[in-house]
Length: 287
Ligand SMILES: [Zn+2]
Image (cartoon, rainbow, N blue to C red; front, side, top):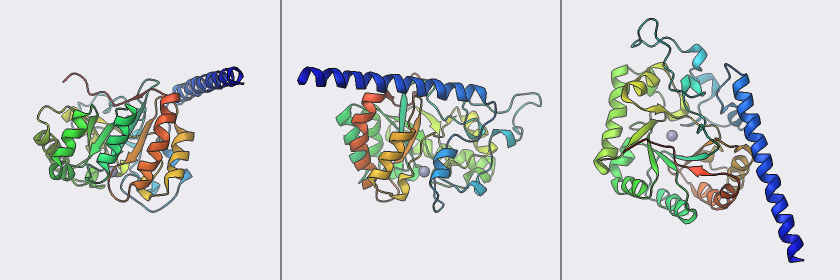
C-alpha cells in the first residue's frame, strides 16, 4: 500500500519536526530560567567517565565557570566581566544562537582523517567548523586550504594543544594563540579566524581575556560523544543522536588517534541530521 506508507511516513516526519520544535522550546526555556548554570557539557561528561584527555578534563581539574571567574586584570574597575556572549564556562559559546546545529572537528588537520571527514561533509553538502592545532596547520597547509576552499570555517585550538595554556602568563597565552593564527594565515592569507577553543575546555580568565583582546569568540560545546576515546561508531552515533537539539554545538575529532569510529558515525549521522536539523558552519562574519 504505497499511498498509506507515504502518508504514514509524512505523519512520522511531522511528529519528528514537532518533537524537535518542542525540545528546542524546552531547551531555550530552561536556559532562560536558570541564571547561573553549570557548563552545558556537564550532562555529557558525567554520563561518560573515563581517563583524562585533551578536550575533556576531569571535573576536579576544571577551573570553574563564570561564577568563579575573577575580574579581568585588563578591565576597568567598573567594567562588566569579560562576557563574550555565551552560556558556557567563562562565557564561552555553547549554542549556535539559532535552531541550527554546528558540527565542530578538533585537533587536526590530520592527513589521514581530515580528508575523510571533508569527503563526507561534501557528500552531504554540510558545512562545519574545524578547530585546528597550530603545529598541525603548519605541517599540513594543504588541508587548511581544503577546509577553507570547501566552505568550512576555522577555529584556533592553540599551538600544540596545551591543556594548561590557561595557567600560563598572559603574554604566553597571547603568543600561543597568535602563533596558531599565523600558521593558519600562512596557508590561507585571507582566512577569517573568529573562534578559539581551549584544549580540554580548560578555560581560565586569562584565556578568555586574551580571546577578547584578539577578537576571538571562546568556543565550547554542548554535545560531546567523547569520540577521542574511540568508543566505537555506535556509541558515538547514539550519544549525538540522543543529545542533539536545535542550537547544539557538537564536539568531534578529526585527529589525535584512530578516528575510524568518528568517520563511520558521521556516515550514519549526517543523513539523519539533515532530516532533523539545519546544519551550519559557525559564522565568521564578513571576510
Ligand atoms: Zn582538542
